[in-house]
Image 1 (cartoon, rainbow, N blue to C red):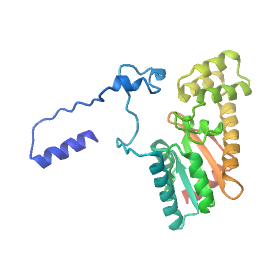
Image 2: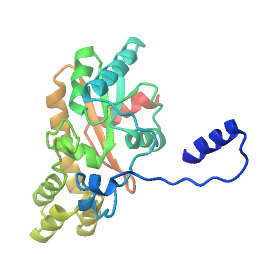
Image 3: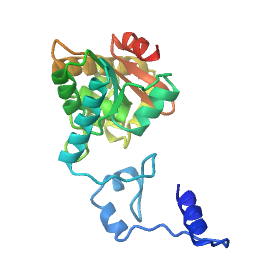
Image 4: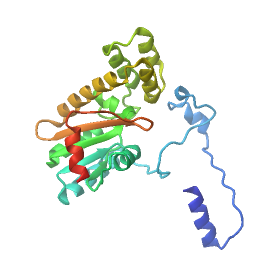
Length: 246
C-alpha cells in the first residue's frame, strides 16, 4: 500500500526517479510501554498490526453508530440473516476458508455485545459470529467488549478449560504463562487436549451468545486460528453456514 501511494504521488509530480520511504512512529518506544508489546516480546518500539493498512480514528460512539448504520442498511436491503466478524481476520477467514459470500455481513470491531443487542432489536432472524480464538475466547468468558483495555481473560480462560479437560498442573501453569492463544494452542496440541478444550470453550461460547441474544435471535459462533483453521463451533453453526453459502 505504501508503494502504491508513493508511485501515485510520483506520477502526479511527473517524477521518474527513485524513492526511499522511512517509516517511523514518534515516541513509539514510550507509547509501547502502555501496550501489550512488552508481554509479547516486542521491544525497542511499538508494533503496527492489522491487515488493511488503513487507520480510521473514531470515538467509541462513532464506531457504534457506524456499526448500527451498517446493520440497519443490511436489514433495509432485506437481510434476515447476517454474518458478523470482529475485523479483517474474521472477514478473510469467512470468505476464503469458509466460502461465504459475505453479501450479508457486518464488522463489529470489539463491540460484540452491542452488535448482538442491535441485531436482536432490529429483528434479524440469525447472526453467525466468526472470529479468531483470541477474540471469541473472551466472549466465552462473558466479555462482550473485547478491547484489551476493557477485558482480557484469554490465558485464564484457556487454563481453566484445560484443567476441566484433565490437564495437569504443569500444563495449566504453562497456559497461564503463555503470551498468545496461538501459543496456548500449541501447548494443548502437545498435550493431546486441543479438541476437548476447544469443545469446552465452544460450549461456553454457545451459552454466552444465547444468553445475550435472547429467545428471538438465533446465534452461533465459529472460532479459528490462522494456522489450524476452525478450532471450534457452536452446535448450530453448520446450519447458519449453509444459509450464507447458498
